[in-house]
Image 1 (cartoon, one colour):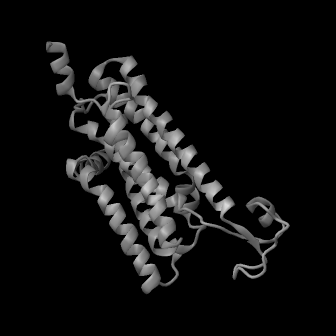
Image 2: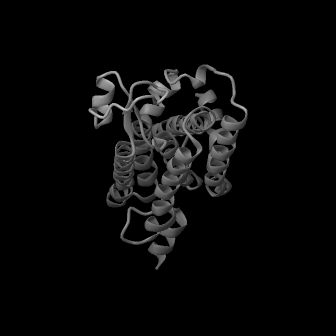
Length: 259
């Protein structure tokens, strides 16, 4: 438990800072542009992380929203209820996960449609010989063809959105104080370590995507969709009264009670 406590303190000291929330979007955009330029001008040698079948890609990135959803669900519920004691507000705040799910579904559907309507089926990866009899990606691959269209980077989108969402929700830790002997403390500490580790995995794999995969324009669009999803919610809509709202601050609730 002592090791877990130390790890949680380090992660809280790193990810809960306002500066991280302020500069992480710019850092991700910089990483994407720098990594893409490196890929074009001086490609790095193949590595374990450049293999799409690496463990982090197969078991984490491809399930990025599921991991983020399943860890944020108990974290938001426990921390928000601990601070406010109001089940209604907790349910309202948990609706951020439904909003995130909608953003994930809509964006990935858009990406799939863009690739479909801009693509063709080819005989080889070298894009030789169009197979006009196959009009969609699934049919093309089923017949041994190679589909090529404008493939907006879903990894760039989702890893950007998930990392920023976790950092936004972890801001509540500024207000959370628990008794070390209480089971709630153990649960929140464990979730902090899990979410912090997940955030570092998302940023690492975002860098790998920038350096090894996709064209620059595909990554630019993917990253912009992720930034738009984050800013449109946490930077605009969640500031309004008719929204799931931002993570609670004890000071704001104290003021409301006093008034």
